[in-house]
Amino acid sequence: MEQVKTLVIGAGAVGLAVARELAQDDPDLVLVDKEPSFGRHTSSRNSEVIHAGHYYQPGSLKARLCAEGNSLLYNFLESNALPHKKTGKIIVATNEAEISVLNKYMELGTINGVPDMRMMSKAETQALEPRVKCVAGLHLPSTGIFDTHAFMQCLEQQAEKLGAFVVYGMEVTQIQKQADRYLVSFTNGDVFECEQVLNCAGLWADQVAQMAGIDLQSSSLKQHWCKGEYYKSTKIKDIKHLIYPVADPAGIFLGIHLTLNLNGEVRFGPNAFYVDRIDYQFEDKYLEDFHVSVNRYLDVPLVDLEPDDTGIRAKLQGPEDGFRDFYIQEESSHGLCGLVNLIGIESPGLTASLAIARHVAALLKLKRD
Image (cartoon, rainbow, N blue to C red; front, side, top):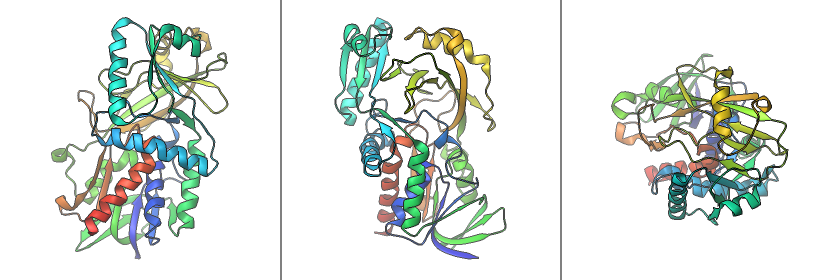
């Protein structure tokens, strides 16, 4: 039996950030993941966007940690010379009714501390992006893009340099609470005895929480898997900013938007539909819907859209639900002292990852004090 003070489960961007943050004061830490390397799911199958924080309800963890995480992430990328670009984002209103939505984003962003936003007329928007079709725009210069793989690799290296151990191919099968310790069992037969368990298991975070004794139904913590697909175009060469429509009114996703990679190549997506299994196969049956959505704000011929990639995010918000915040909780109130669950960490979780790690460290410090 392996004895360790702190066990972090899940080596996506959030788990890596948590391990790095905690290892600064606690080198007796092990980070495990069931996959053969880090970030094999949501953290590497996304738009690679650094979000500003204007979509989220003031006072929510999503609002606070996104705004804080935006600044922390840029500082981290710059200080470690990691590839990124502050492209800025333009959210476009394609009809008069959508201008009120832009005004709402402006209001939320101001409350949440998003810097340098400005409303733009059609002429001002098209001066920045001549191809865009709109009646108005909202410019958010603090939005950007980055290399998520390089980011996660750097987090892993820094955590290990601080003394943490990172072990792959370790899938959790059981978590038992015994007095002030946890016994965590794995498919390979290993058992870890630890004081603290940080559940950063992403798509499977609710299942890990259930293993530890959390009643998902009574706590409303069952995650819903939501799949998104991306198309790319090699024909569009002259876009400088990320271009977003107004978001889905139900809050399920941010709309089929245009993003850029660090080479300036254009990508559209994701769409959003709930699924009951993890399957990254591409389904081109949504191509026409993509084409219609994109052409609301940019003229792109159907033949110029090529299938690119898919991703799946874990949401606490089900198909019929309203807004759900991140669930980040030290579980002493459930009799599980030393267990911290991070559930429903969808967008803006990647942007917020460093801020989430600080928040988790603060929760554990509060428990100790």
